[in-house]
Length: 456
Ligand code: SAH
Image (cartoon, rainbow, N blue to C red):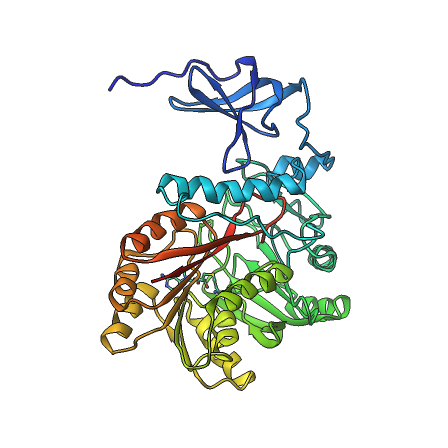
């Protein structure tokens, strides 16, 4: 095959018509079939664009002048946030965002010829699609004594200072500012990725949606925090909702935010929240859904479709701290949960006890290693629920599901591409897709979550 050459070059300027929206939320224009991905541009808009990066197969561009507005365009005037690219759909009306997410699911199912088998439902959205996050995880920048929090500039590692993040709870934004004020008072330095010097890397705030309890995690490039006692005292005074203060030690040159070692500086090694009428303890390293209001909608879809009578054996794979597991246990004979993060499984066991639920078994393992073992041990599930990370299910996991043939399979997915790939195998293995329900867990962003119900 001849090597493709780009019909345009970096810094070219041209007028194009946007014909599509990429899964990342970028406008797509084409020159002789060569795609150009344009920031802040919507289908139907004509724009004068500047090419910022040109590769052999595609290019990136920004808009110099927009010649018309798409009907779905809405104004968002926070320049700083726009530079970060953390809200790639913010210029699209919310109804159009919900439609875009449904289309993403349809489009991916189409690739596997599965769209003919099921009618994807309209996305369940939020009434107020702002300030929904119960967790903030922000890098720290600035000179000593003048630190700030923010997000990275689009495709860069420069930090753009922010105080109002729009999608996090107000009380979290407020806590971030108070934490920064205390760090500035004690002249704590910001970590610099380039030189691997400086102390504070990230501040993480996690908040119980129903309890309002806050956990603050200070991620530092050291084993110790200078002025530790004073900082603890000041944070306790400044933050009445603080129930857990954690020092996480991350001294590696890495993009991974949390280090392995941590020490509780104050309070509990967890914070608490309520979900589906149950109480959950959440530890610093444990996954917990970030949009609590929509998590109830999501779990409701699982519970509504699972059809339990009290006699069933259920497997909840990728169970985190056991949220879905325990919600299911109330309606099943026994539920088995598996999760790779050991700390999350410790929490899941603690949460079972806390909620006086005894018909559950939790295992810390890789789902793809555990599932075949369970099958060998004779565990014969009626229902399997999965909620894997973006990369989807691993082959040995799928193989053992097809081996034991549960009557029902519920697939909670945060990535329609791997969802479609995995569904193809289940359909070929004798399953039928009953329904696909997208749910908007991350308004203003391009993330697409969905619940698929399969039966034999
Ligand atoms: N169902 C839970 C968690 C979903 S997030 C909830 O709704 O809260 C996905 C979870 O899968 C995370 O907790 C992650 O730690 C876990 N995980 C990732 N890879 C895994 C693997 N190979 N085996 C088991 N769990 C895994």
